[in-house]
View 1 (cartoon, one colour):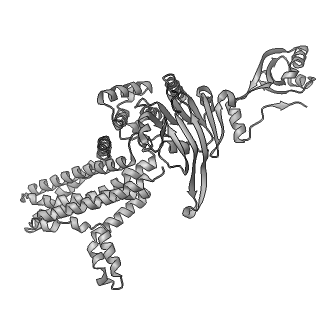
View 2: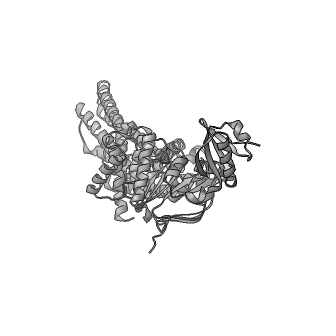
View 3: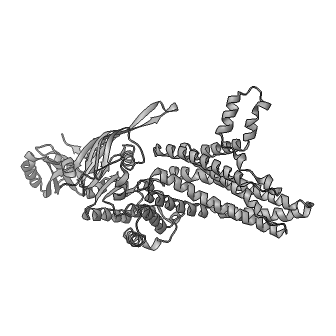
Length: 258
Length: 318
């Protein structure tokens, strides 16, 4: 890919960011911030000395959940909507390759997710401040892997949207993300289902994206720092997995008839 | 040196899988050999489902062909460098409704890598040309169908293309919009551009096109200049007469077909019988208003070639 190609990816990414920002994502953020603040204030009243931990738990879990919902449904919609509405016809007749279009979409929504996660983190810090809890930058060590997990979810959503309809793509993405979040269960499946072939459980465990790798919430909430090596490892895992899924998506998108 | 033709296809074909498990195939386009010269307005005609859009999609890289080759402006289809010199308006375009017309054109211009000053100038010029300058800042979701069509045309011209491919460009336009698009197409021709457009509005094709191709069920039925396709039938003449009624005409010594045109009659007269008919009309107290060779309209040709039933307007006296 040449410099001009990178420029076109940037143009598509900027437009995708504009599209997603104009599509009520901000309302989700506001809603989330209000919900979190209210939860924090209410829980402070009813808990004894655990209010700070509960706020952090709820805040990080909400960030993960809302971010995943945005990544799945907006990620699927970005491509399938273009195909269904045929809005990509005039674009693909321009000097814009399918690879560039798909990558631009990925980076555009990736940027939107970054803004979302940043705003949610800000909301969490503001809630903690409102309850006079300590503001520790340690929280960011849980937020960063959450963002990496969201990028992987987005890549999976884009892949599914290149191979099937928007409804099936949403279902497929949700199933895969759920399976990835319960990767440990798959790993230990032989304990509950002794008849399951070990090669199958091993294969599934390694083939499915392991979203548990991105979960440092408990550790951070309990005040334990995440080692730099762990963060580096999870970054490499996300990079490799996202690249692989995007390559599959690009390959599928290249051969598609519109 | 003669420039390469604008579009050349050779044996281009396409079929779709249909049915459960996609075992059967439906032919959308039979091997197509077509050449569109530089600087001409080329009409691609055919009823719905005849393969017009399939052809355009293959040419624009939106769909792969099963077989055959094609080149655009002398460049093979697979080498996408031609995209810089081509503009495309799809049928019923859907443009991003979260953008304004100006933003959409800005986006299109940036994909071509146009410098900022050139983009601004070109966008203003195009918006003015398609009559959307005053709506430039309006969200596209507030646009009527015709306005979207005109915005779509503007994006197809953003790069000042040498070849413009338009899929049903008159679709959804009111008479003023159609005239505007017709004028733009003629202006493009004056500028030496090539326009390849599909349509089922035959009067537009008849008014605009240098050459046309006719497609039926994915098969090319005819291609050529309008003069070649719509041959003047010199063996028959149309004689417009007044002052005689249908009964009188039926008594003429030579049988002729006729149809009423208001209070007058239009007679289809064999050239050899013209003298006899003129004498007969004048003898019956009538007057000859006009005599002209019969020229088939594109619509008549289209209906005949498509094998469609046509209401017979002529009455044959026997």
